[in-house]
Length: 528
Image 1 (cartoon, one colour):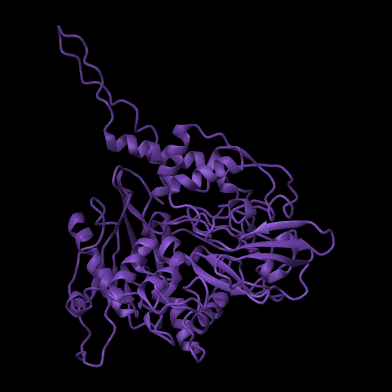
Image 2 (image 1 turned 180 degrees about the horizontal axis):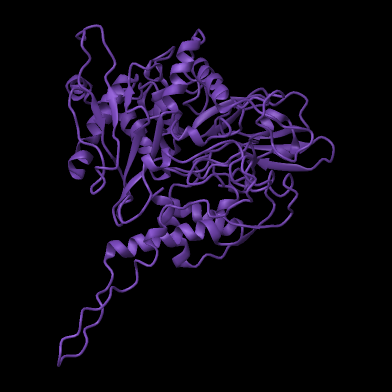
């Protein structure tokens, strides 16, 4: 059943792509595809997984009765398969999330179900080829390296949309903030567009799934509004910093996206905003199977999207600085607790009973599957407990008043079994530092108006909203669940594999992972 589901998954993706304003090489077959019922779930886990049902959007020629539902099967990836679970049991493509607006884009244009509800270079390249570069994702407003890029020929389109095609990046154009504590003194833009009037900031589309565990919206939290009357306030911070709910922020963000990315002439109605956000909040996506370890719900493991959906979340849960905001319990570094049952599966099995007159046989070696499962369990423990010195991280060492903090991966990814940060804090771990700049990225030199100090960066991050020098390079902590489905990684798409993520942080913090530890940590991250 699992192999059959994987085989049919591309057909489901094609049907969804056609429904949401994208091009599909099999669009002519999408009507019949959406009337087929497919079996979802992973091998050995069919009884514990609720599948996602996709209801076809009505058309002018559709019959009065809706077509039978389509069950969204596991989606194959390099490490196995991912699965989306809907808390309401169905994905209705009549929802305005899938509705094309001004320039033909819908929310789903950049948030694809088969790409972890984001987009990636491989699938974007297929869409480019199938459509000759006319798919709605390829629009000058933010899909191109510059809104002035030439797109008359196919080769020109390929060059114009190169950041999408190579790194899955959208161009966010933002002006230098008024009254900022810093000035732009130099711009090096390979596309000859960026200036103080509009910096070009290339960022990955964040997934529209697992939003239950979000504390802020957008990489730079620009859609997260302050709200002095809110109870969602950072503890032990003066002056008070209080924020609107994520629900209110998502409502605003949905309209901003439609007006900006889709270039719609009119705002969404309140009902459309509500429907989009309600739909997004039903989605939970994780890895469901591993090529090496098999089902991530077998043998006591607690992986998969239905388990994730059952996890609690509230503002300040398990906060590193002040402890849990509701229970008062101190921070618990054992943030990830899914694969404890797989510990020690790499130990030899008990030997068979001896046979009289013969030497005792050696104990059977553990299976390859059990070896893979034990590696995942070790990686989980490394994530939670491998200590290293956290230093020089703006937003962490300065605002938490800890110049040198002994911590682990869980110190920033503190939300249980999700890996987000449970309050509105943004950190600069050096991802956008000028020293990491690649030739395809603009580089900005900023000068502190008071001290004269300069810094180079490919993305000033939160400082573009606050105008504060200390906020340069700071971005939100992203969710870790389902990351295998949405490479490349970091806000700028600068690393393409999970092993690259591990290497970056190993070097950044001088952690000193052994080769085995690095492999185990990567194995764990791949099955989230």
